[in-house]
Amino acid sequence: MNVFRSAIEGKRLSSVVFVEDYVQLVFDGDVLTMFVWPEISGGSKIFKQGSEGYCDALSRLINRRVVEAAEHPGEQLSMLFSSGDVLSMSLREDDRTGVEAGTFHGTKDRLSIVWN
Image 1: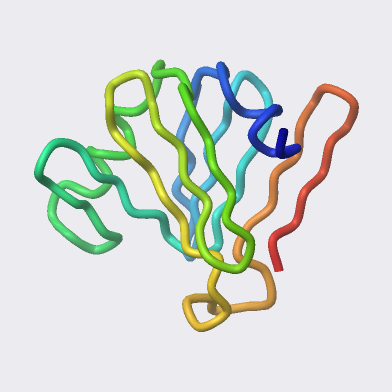
Image 2: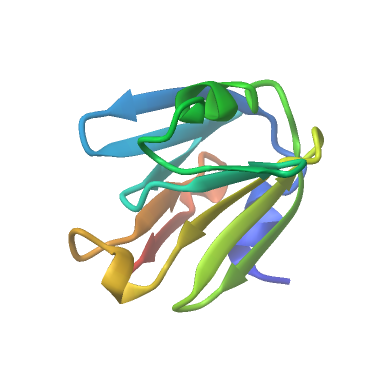
């Protein structure tokens, strides 16, 4: 099983932190920092950074659990939440504004993952 997948599945999103040019998702103490703004899809809607309802769509994921996660190296990171919504972040180099697409810091076993 993928390291990220095993670390994040079953975790509850406890907070969303919007910073000037990135977003942090906190899962029961573990922190996923996304330097590439994620997309949220739910039902027939897709929310992208800057679109109306984007912040609300991210915030609605609070208290939801990650049911399934997938990492496709160099392509995409995605998480299916208990609400049925899917959050995905591009790992493609062309979509980055810096060196890293994102990082994950787990409290258990001091796990650290960098997508670059």
